[in-house]
Figure (cartoon, rainbow, N blue to C red):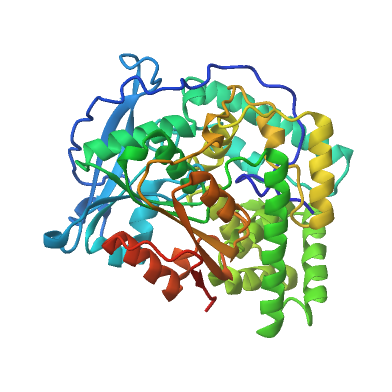
Amino acid sequence: MRHVLAAVTVIAAAVSACASAPAAPDADPEGAVTAKPVAWGPCTDIRRPQGATPAQADPTVRCGKVTVPLDYSKPNGDTIDLALIKLSATHPNNRIGSLVFNFGGPGASGVDTLDQASKAFGVLRTRYDLVSFDPRGVQRSAGVRCGTNAEMDAYAALNTLPINAETRAKGRAANQQFAQQCERDAGKVLPYVGTINAARDMDRIRQAVGDPKLNYFGMSYGTQLGAVYATEYPENVGRMVLDAPLDPTVDFEQRAIAQTRGFQQAYESFLRWCVKEGCDLGANAKAADDNIEKLLHQLAAKSLPVNGRQLTQGLASTAIAAALYSDLTWPFLETALSHAMKNGKGGGLMYLADTYTGRNPDGTYSTQLSSFPAITCVDSTERPDEALLRRTEATALKISPLFGSEGPGGLCRFWPAGGSDQARHVDATGSKPIVVVGGKGDPATPYQWAPKLTAQLKTATLVTYEGEGHGAYTSGNKCVTGVVNTYLLNGKVPVKGTTCAAT
C-alpha cells in the first residue's frame, strides 16, 4: 500500500525528463517600487456553509487584489492579480497593523482558508487586521489548472495497489498525461510560480496594506515562504511565526522518507487511540491494521459506488492520510473506515479524499491538486531518474507498507517547466527575531525539520510542541497559543528551549 505523502496526489510512478525553462532572476529589479493601496470591497466568490451569511454581505470580511509582474525580470511585461482577503481588527484603537497568513500546501487558498478558520485566530484579530492571499498559481491568482474535471477525477482516483510493474506503468502514464495537461492549460505561468517570486509578491502585499514591516504567520509550506521572505527582505521582517516548519534543504528522497516515517507514526498513534477508545476496526492495533489493509486490497480489486462515483483504493488511501493531519479527525476516520468495511458504504472516505484533493461537491476542483506540483517542481532542479525513484520507494516501503512511495520526484521528473534551487537556501541574518514552532507528532512536517530550519535562519527561536497533528497553533494547545499570542501581540520572544506538553 502506497501513498505519495509529499503531494496532494496518490500517483506513484516514474516519468521521463522535463523540458527546461528560465529560472527566476537572483535579484528583484523593482524592490523600491511601492505597490498601490488595496481597494477593499465585498468578497463575491467565497463559498460558505448553507445558512451562513454570504461573504459578499458580511461587512467584517473584505476582499481586494494586488497587481504584480508575472516575470520580475520584466517589470513592464505581463502582470497577474493576487487575490486578498482582510478581516479587520476588532479593537482598532489598539491595532498593531496587518498579520499576513499563508496556510501551506503549497497550493492552499489563503482567501478561502482564512475565511473558514478565522475563529481560530480571534485573539490575534483583536489587534491585527488578519490578511491572507492566494499565492501566484493558486485559485484566483492565475491559478494553475491541469485538465478537465473528468481528467482530474481519473488522476486522483488512480490505484497504487498491487505494487507491481503494471501498477507502476499506469502511474507513469498518468503522470505523463497530467504534466502534459498542465503544459496545455497553464503553460504560460508555470515557470513563474516558485517561492522566490511569491516572496517578492508578499513584499508588494506589505506595501499595499500600508505596513512598514511584514508581520507574518506561516504554516507548513508557509514556513518556507516566510523563511525565503526573511532571506530576501530581512530588514522588512516584523513579527514572524513559522508553525509546522519545512526544512528547505531536504531533497525529494529525504522528504519522501521523512514524511513516510511521520505518517506511519501518526497512523500507529491513531490505531492505539482507536483501541483505547473501543475500536470498531479491530480488537487490537494489529487486527485493526490488518482489516484496513484488507479493505484497501478489496478496493483495489473492486471499487465501491458512492453517489454515482467510485471509491477506489487510491481515494481511500488519500482519505486515511488526510485524516491523520489532526487527531480531531480520528473519530471521523474510524467511522468512515468502519462503514466501508462492514456496510460497503464509502461516503465518509470519499468526503475525506475530496477535502484533500480539493474536489468540490459540484464536481469542480480547486487548483490544489495542480498548484502543489507546479510550485514544488519549479522550486527544485531535481529530476530523479528511474533508479533513484525505485530506491526511494524501496526505502519508504520498509518504513511503511501503507504510506511508502517514491515521493514527488516521479511527477517532477516530467514537469514541463524547469526549476531553481534558490528557495532551498535561507538565512535571515539581519532580521528581527523569528519564532519557529515544531510538533513532535506532526506527520507531514516531521519535528526533525524544526531545529534545522531554526538553525538555518540564524535569527530564530524554536518552540517545541509534544502533541499530535500538523500545526501546533491550531491544535488548541493553550501553552502553544499562549506563547505565540504573547509574541505576536506583545513582542515577547519565547525563552530558548520552550516546550509545550501535549494535552
